[in-house]
Image 1 (cartoon, rainbow, N blue to C red):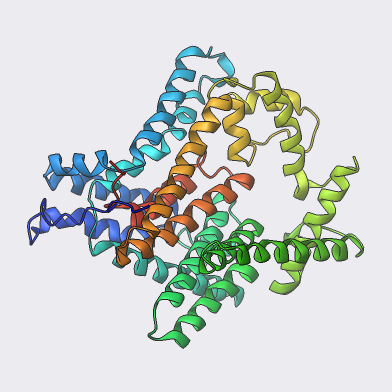
Image 2: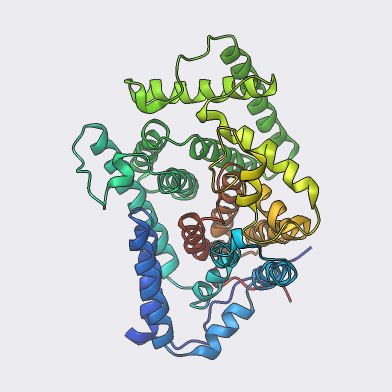
Length: 436
């Protein structure tokens, strides 16, 4: 079945040459990926500059048409509508009074994607990808510099020097996504292939050995698998890849369980090289999962399993419409009283958070967005336009990274993650039109 074109080149709607004021939003958007590798205030400062430039650039009718034509518009508005409906219906006890509005706005994260998409397609998209690659190389170099104790512990570099929760996890995920995109570029381009491989290996080494996040390493492996399956064009041969991966994981799992449990899983107390730290964290994860399944006590390192178990009990009480926005934390602290994880502020899982607060309808609305992203990538790959088809894998990788990241972290609950992904999603999605 033939597909209609899915991208608007803007040749008929935009002038041949843009004024500096009209081009400024594109230029700022092209450089925004670099801000993701620094403190969150730098990213939000860049976003503010973008919005100011967007307002000053004019051409609002065309910008609205760009947003209106996006395949993401309806599912994004649907998620916001579900959150508004839940907010109107729910009671607001005193314990959530200060958390309600921050919690409500977290569910509107995808709305920030729409103004980014208003700028339309252009050469800025490729520049933004190269800027993102440059940011990943810079981040890898900062991790290396910190390993050799050459990086000062200042506000600008603190996330590289010490582990800072979500920001440190984001840095790892950004390296994983950048490495996946670099691998895709290496497959497409025939120039400088040796240099491309060396840069890719440099970023991957920093990701695995220095970034201190297991989630990001897992995401990178899955992104490689996704690209390999796409290389086989989703034929029966591609089924061997996940089967081989599962066999390797099963063998590694059995081998790890046969090893003695580590004396401690608190990495900060261990003096060892990067590779030994990576092996320690992997071994701890496997043993913690086994201990939890057997009903034995787990350490702080394995508390996510405890959080997931208690959260599923909360979900079972109101599975369809949920308990309401910002309800997870007070409900969890009552259920988890006396447990290691009692003071947690999120369930470290977007699926469980949406089920708890927005119910089944909220989770389905989120999955509809991610499903639309995958479907749009599928259409882009078969559009017949080489420039559009190349961006399809970028969108697929981002979507997979969000879906996997959401299993272990608050990808959309936390603005540190959410805004970063909205900026990156703009690179492949700008200019893409829904099918009429």
